[in-house]
Length: 140
Image (cartoon, rainbow, N blue to C red):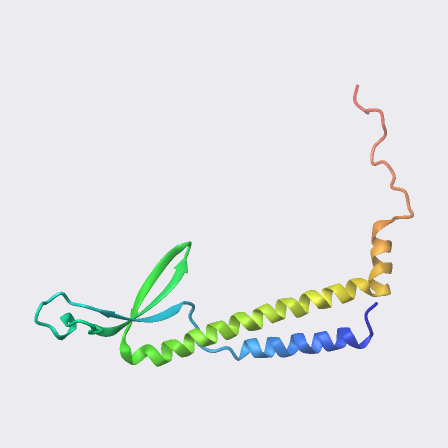
């Protein structure tokens, strides 16, 4: 059986997580990748052996309706995009914790005698219901 302080502790934790959720900033899902490419011109510096190529060219990839979507991110926006991805991950962590705490609180509430007694009251009615109409039809 759960202690009396446990529901109070869980409610406090839930409220803290909700407050944390309210402070979430700009966010975006996905992975940011810097890519280097070779242009194919034989006299270009990228054509040399061991040359990394041109770049990096930044792209953000994520799944949308089961399909991979790629968006090109300009180099000056890379730090901001990294912050947005980090904020999205923080958001996911907070919501996961909120669901876990809420589920624990629901389980604790099921264990309390008050919840059990109310459950019993809802299930059984002492009065018998009356039939709304007589068994025989009034029409002939």
